[in-house]
Amino acid sequence: MVPTTHYLILGAILFVIGALGVVVKRNMITMFMCVELMLNAVNLTFLAFSRMLGQVDGQIFVFFVMTVAAAEAAVGLSLIVVLSRRRKSLDVDQVDQMKW
Amino acid sequence: MELLTFYCFAVLAVASGLVVVLQRRAVYSALALIVCFGSMAILFFQLGAQFIGAIQIIVYAGAIMVLFLFVVMLLDPQTELFGRNQLKGLTAVGIPLALLFFIVLASRIEQTVPGQPGSTGVSLVGNTKQIAQLLFKDYLLPFELTSILILIAVIGAVVLAKRPE
Image (cartoon, rainbow over all chains, first blue to last red; front, top):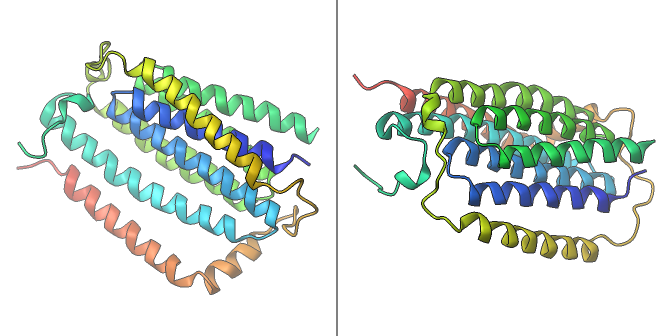
């Protein structure tokens, strides 16, 4: 059986990759994808702890995280579509005003 | 054998995650993210979470990533390529910060997990029934609230993406 620590380390690596992407990338869609990657890393951690503790509650939490991620993706992507229509660009540095 | 599977798919997940970050074109990032989610679904299966693994493939790799690809292809391909960013030193600062973040996280992991896990109560044959019972008894209210959340998200997406007359 693979020790829980391995899963946690993998989750940490993926989370850090996602965080790095959010900081470094300037493309709105790619940043959003990196957020999804971070969410998935947290899901992996949840499942690893769920197996370690022998409880399925962790899997229920992952289920909820996934539903919220789906809702977030729908709203976020439509926001991106609206923004890119108005600004003609996907660069986050271009979006520095609250109103225009 | 189990460890070998873990390492294969862990390396695949990390590699495709790096491709997501390093790739310039958003289409390739999205495709790499699908690979990453797929290999993580295998790891979920290995952790005894068959239901979550299936949901991962259907909802994440299937629905959400198709939505992403759709938006990437809907928007002008010219806009997804911009070489220079305005903050030049961002990458140089970001990578050391990310490494530092990882070191902090990893050191906490060593302190958090008390030794090796023993035999677990989660059955390896399938616990979908267990999940369903928990979801529809103890977590019934959050489950129903989730459906309202999804409804709000759908309405919001439609209202936002509607082309102004």
